[in-house]
Length: 542
Image: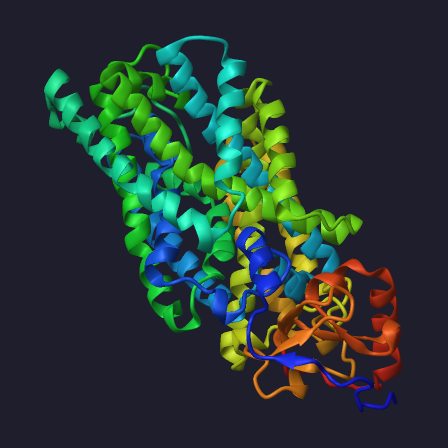
């Protein structure tokens, strides 16, 4: 047994140091736990998050689905999705705020270090694709109105987007999205009124039937619902933004900011507007994001360009921000490349521009379908884990995510995720129309069933590598006390700190611990030496 007495006294303070705050203005504690002092107010957090509400994707996807199953079926499917999105994102928002974790850190607790690395990559790549799609929409609107080569407008869109996300959620994204919110709201209302004034109003759009008969094998409303399941990446987006919320506001933010009221506007209102516009504004050719944008610009002229710019700039501030933070997390964990988030903003902007130059919409939607299935599996495991914590009385702030205290692989969580994802992708490839419709819900059911079953036989070692010398127990309040890291010399909250067995058990922060191979090797060796044989299968902590 290793002596449990700490080797070094801790350098403890109870305030954020100027250098930490300077870095946080751009980094947003992307590789750390968000301390209570850096949390946002209800209003500030909502302004940053409401950028998602204005994505033209929501306007167009409703009208696109309506072409297949009709307006009534689409509205029913969207209404059901509104409730499901609100419930899932509300749960994720509350847990993220109370735990302070990002998607990457939560995934480390549930899937182990290997699974967490893949989760950060999956999230980062998926959001990058959305950034490409939404940015391309702005470029299409600008070219349609002003002319010129499309590559020039791609470059301009990327050039102005990058500086908007150099600073974080708390210091800038809330402000820029708050400024652009009125432009989006009044612009969308103006588009509807303008369309009625020019083309007249007919209630026929409410009862519009599919243009042709499609034998889907399922009710039309269920088809619509499964389409929206493919965009459950929003749950991950919720998680990474909601972690900036104050724990005292977790209930409100879960119910309102990230809950059903938000998705009522985002999904149902936007979808209804899209269906009305599609039925009212004449658009040449089949409906797509491209033709819909061109139709709005043709109707409203420069005001249409302004509407598209405002709506897409709002959503792309979130896309570019989350793309940079998750790719930063992935490369820091997988390759020990610890570059600042601002550097990753530049890198991902270049990547986005280069991919824009290809035939984006030709392969983007197919790629997102497969990624959507994998994300549905992640959501299934995540929600099952949160429910299990609730049943066991385990608080969110008891989550163990520190790299020296979680295993490389959690066989229950990672196994459920991999098996469910593989089955979903198999259905997508070989299941024909049945697989295309049923892959997301079947994937969800498999992920929940396997992980719930695994939790019934889980051992503590799946989630925690027990070691002595825990700084959380050496301070009076691990969420308020800051401890100085011996490696970077910065002070972070004790909740994320560990002791470094490779450096005489000096304190080490979350980011430095994950980056240093010598720490990870020594921590695993210490855990093996500290462990005692036990037949216990119950778990005290997740």
